[in-house]
Amino acid sequence: LSIRRQRQMCIRDRTFEILKFSDQAPKALLPDTGVPKLLERQLSSLFIDLPGYGTQTSSVVAVSDQSYMIAERSHRQGVDATLRGHIG
Image: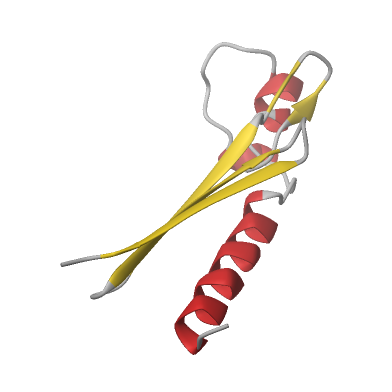
């Protein structure tokens, strides 16, 4: 693999790891949207996994001067898709 491709894969994988964070916001920082506070807190994480509701897919877009990469991960089906191309 080229160094550029290795960097793209590293960015993609690390970003997918970050998008999987389930840390919830502190109660003091929650907005008042009208839903119960417990639900508001559960919905505050980057990755939501509640019965009947949650994050289905995550997408990563990386662009450089010469190339781009678009990656998508389906969390329920365990499928990844990546599209790469050159600019110009």
